[in-house]
Image (cartoon, rainbow, N blue to C red; front, side, top):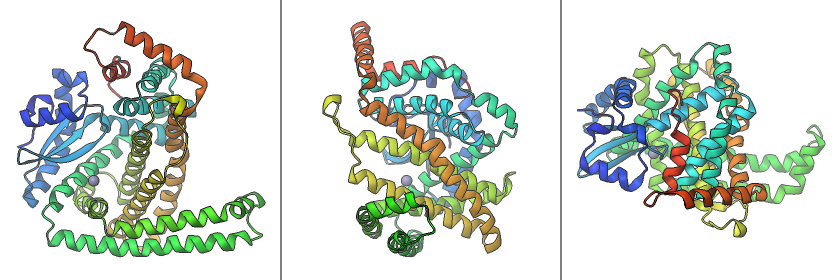
Length: 422
Ligand SMILES: [Zn+2]
């Protein structure tokens, strides 16, 4: 029933992949395929079991492409989950950077790799080639291997199993919900109820700003910032609350929350048979979602920045970008609350995990999200490296054999020295 690696791909899926992604060269290597099959044997068996129970007949295809995503699609009347092994590798690497405390320099080097891959997909070749080159030139300076050795727990590898199964289960839930049956209605009602209470917390944040202005106990600098920006802070908060209300009427967005929820339900038997405690599993899921959010916010910035000419580009936060950020923020809190309720239940124990999870959320923002965003803004908006960028693109275009694409050049730079661990 299951198949993985490029060899097991049907002609319809092959055509679909060719029109939507750039399949990376290693995928055609026999050794690479064997390793893929080995790595994904357990997740695929688990997914097949769930798929059988729901009669979704999903075929799982493991590919290796530049897309950094996992998706459920129906092609030729058949349900498929197309999961990118490169996404798994990226998440595993982000786990290592985050969990073992890699240096900021290391995080920035890796942020070049992630951004380069995304930029090339959106047609920003100057930036992508420059960034790929930065990654190639500096990758030997990365300290994550030493940090991992010092730590010695290999916790990133334990987490990645849960994380990839969570992603696969989320995608599978889209196939389950295609039927829009009773099951979907019940979960949707629960999500709507959660969203209503979440809006209330957003509204109380609004009131909080107004009281903070007159609160003498908070640092002068912070108080001043709130005072000066009170109007826009409240305005922002209103837009967010309106948008969350809107989610309840938008089936596609609502379905993402429902899929997160059903994925966690289906993850429970897997957690119970694994060596991870519920608390560790929750941390793994939250970290996974934080990694995905960091990647997706970079994707959104690239998809919204459609000005290819640097001279005309403006570094402005788009309203739409803000709404995506709100959407991911709400999903993060929903996943967190549901995990607490479903996997722990006891209030005292929740309190203990909650402290760890809150720290993870704020650390992740500093350690992973910020370097990725900073590198991307520098690449897109900083005039500093422009001349160099233009020169390298020109050189490549002048020397490229005809029939080659800029996109392939980026992936050749990024992946020409394949390492078993990245
Ligand atoms: Zn989804």
